[in-house]
Length: 153
Image (cartoon, rainbow, N blue to C red; front, side, top):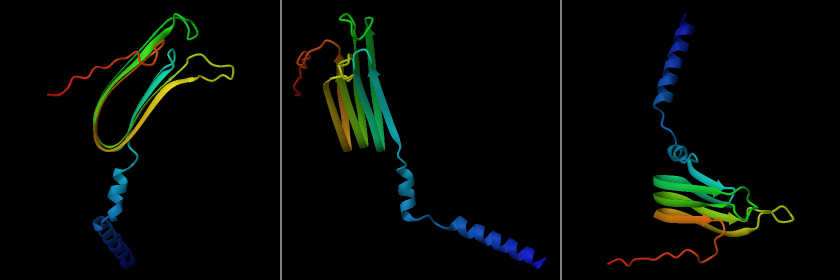
């Protein structure tokens, strides 16, 4: 009988002790950085266009992204086929961001590869605001897009 009571007292004291014990200082910080990611990846196979929007270690993230893809024609090798990928990105971030786009030729070479037409990669860390418009379409040439800026008064 006494052994049962002693065991019961030990179990109650251990429960109280561990319940009141504090976690190490680094535990909360480690739990808050559990690798949370906010990722958007879009690819238009007919045009060979793709874009990535990735946020990691974000303490604050307000994101508004609109992506539109269009395809027309029968096959990527046909002269009458094509399409576009358009992305409008607006975000306010405290953390890390990776914004990238890539455009490749839909048709393959003799080696079975898709030749790279163009690409852009931006890696950001800190407190920042992003406003970006990406427009990729088949059959376009460098310099076809002209963006006019209005001066601030």
